[in-house]
Amino acid sequence: MRAIAIVPGTAGSRVVDRPEPSITGPDGIKMRVVCVGICGTDREEVSGGRARAPDGARELVIGHEMLGQVVSAGAAVTRVASGDYAVFTVRRGCGQCASCRMGRSDMCETGKYRERGIRGLDGYQTEYVVDSEQYVVRVPAELAAVGVLIEPLSIVEKAIDEALRLQIVRRPDAATTPDWIVGRRCLVAGLGPVGLLAAMVLALRGAKVYGLDVMDAATVRPQWLGGVGGEYIDGRRVPADRVEAVVGPMEVIVEATGVAALEFNLLDALALNGAYVLTGIPGGNRPLQISGAELVRQLVLDNQVMVGSVNAATGHFQMAVDDLRLGQLRWPGHLPALITHYPSSRFGELVGHAEPDAIKEVIDWWSPSATPLERVTPSRSQ
Ligand code: BGC
Image (cartoon, rainbow, N blue to C red; front, side):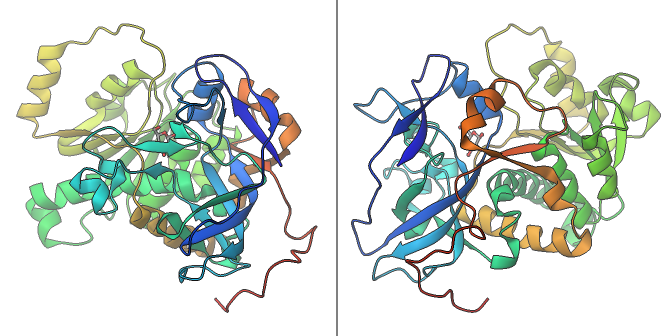
């Protein structure tokens, strides 16, 4: 079968031929890959940055944002059946620490975790994949067109859940009023897929959402933000340190830019007692000057939390499925507009430079409507 592979630490990618995998145990699930998204991590990997091949291998099959359809499942599998749409999660635990043993490898304590398509395990930019049931999340058929957003949305779900839970512990109003976030100003910085999905989730929770980036308001991303009720802030006219004066202080900030200098500057927009969660992973090692004393003084005197959040547990993937469904109901047709499909032959070109009008670029491996799946038995009803 075809797959797209990289040699970690070097630039470029190539199409390789790999043996089709098969199920080896009763908890095994084999999926035919429908499509796989491309994100900043893939771009970093293809440019020779953060990535690791499986032990003993030179090449790594890239890709971690997948949607598939189950073609076969071992005898012990109960969560999915043949014909179901589903996604596999990304991280595989170290098997040693308490977090990994309780299914929370996103909080691995040893750092010896692996990640499919990123760190030590082949990924999903290929035709078929196999993994075990503990890593699968079923996707209802009505979400098939947007299911490829579940992985990036899982990152958002974890980040926002952490910020809101922290506030529930710290703020008396949040502790006593479940809907304290309703109508409160929340800022999303960086209008890539993660930022836009964060805007959607905050809007679903009832927040007054703002989105900051540096592009013209008439372009696709600010327009998409407007579609979920978010207000666009053009950072070229209102930089982070002016947001508070011009728009007002933000109770929650979700950062999704991966630009280290901005990640710190955004603190200027955070309200007293506010929570700031970072999801962007800056590449490179360009030095950055920050005013340390000022930053710490503000965090302490303003009772603020700044938290980094990476990866997601199976529960966050499930939250993503639920919010995708809510998003589809509330803004019909809006979520599919995030996605642009491309054939696998265009991977190398797309990963090198982002298409200006595409928000989430997705590589199609197989179109379920075009090719009937002969090998599967009918899906159980939804
Ligand atoms: C992925 C996460 C992963 C992180 C760090 C992100 O792009 O979505 O699943 O944990 O990179 O490797």
